[in-house]
Length: 286
Image (cartoon, rainbow, N blue to C red; front, side, top):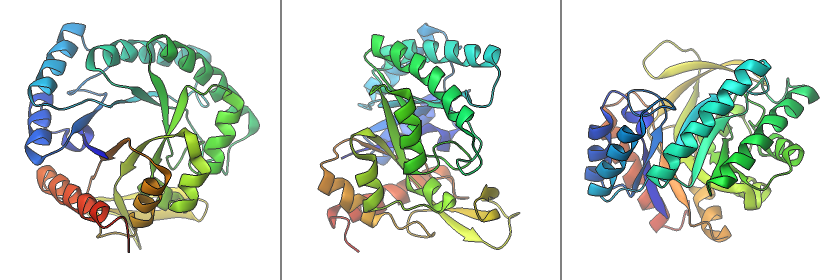
C-alpha cells in the first residue's frame, strides 16, 4: 500500500516545507488540505502548477485533495451553489496535481438526528458534483465522519443509495468511527465494499474531561463526550483488524496519516508511519 501525509497536520508549515517534510520522512505522497496557506479553490493555477513541480521534485504523489466545502444538507440553495462552484475549481486543481479524487462534506446533522430531507438534499447536490467530477476523470470522496450524515457505514450507504452514482467513493476513518462508536474493523470493510476508495488513519481516546492540549468535545449518540487525540497505538483505536481486512479484501490504495496529537508534527508523523508499516509487515495481526 501507499502512504500519504496529510498536509493539514503540517498546517503551521508552508506547502513547500510540508512537501519537503513528507518526502524526508519517507512518505509516498501528500494529501493536501485545501485551505490556506496550502491550497484553496481560489489558488491561482500558476501557483497550483508550482505545487505540482515541488511534489514532482520530491517524487511525491498527490492522491487526494481534501476539500472543506459542501454542507449541502444544512445550507440554503445560494450557499450550496457557491460550494458547488468551489468544488468545480478544485477539480481544475486536481487536474494539474494529478489527484484521483476530491473530498467534500455532505453536511450534518449527526446521522442519528437527521431527517429524510437532509439526505435527499445532500443527494441532489452530490449527484451534480459526481457528474462534474466524471468530466475530469475524478471521483467525489465522502469521509465517514462524526457529526455528519455519514458517520457510520450504514448511514453512508443510505446516502449513496439516494445519489445513485458510482462516481462517489468513501473514505474509511477508524478514528472518526471510534468517536461515533461504530464498528471500524473487518465488518466495516465488508459493508463498504466497492465504495471504499481511500483510508484515513489516526488514533483517539475517550477521556473524562476536555481542556488539555489535544482534547476536544463531541456529540455522539451517548451525549457529550470528550476525547484526546493520540499517536497510533497510544489511544483507543486498534487499527490492526482493519489493516488485516484491507489486505484480505485486496485493497491497494492509499492510506493517509492525519495525526493531530499534541506532539511536534514531524515527530508524530514519523511515529505513525513506522507503526503502520510495522503492523502491515505483521499482516495486521494482533
